[in-house]
Image 1 (tube, rainbow, N blue to C red):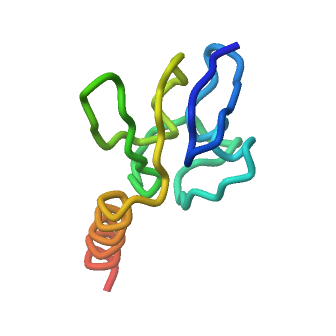
Image 2: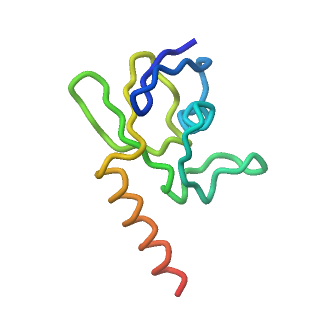
Length: 97
């Protein structure tokens, strides 16, 4: 099992689990358009972005493609994450007027 912190909660997930699955397993909602069990993971919509912290480094990743890691700190609702999601949604809507 891999131990991490998601939105301040200590969470355990099996090694090899994608971050999106672990987040949803913890009862936390993350928006997606392309994540569906009937299709392979592609990360195409980018709406599932979250902020991760490893050591002193913080970055934005797509949770559907990023595997869980021991000691990871994940934030699903930071201002940075919400701004990126908003921008991604605006870009998606601009392509489909």
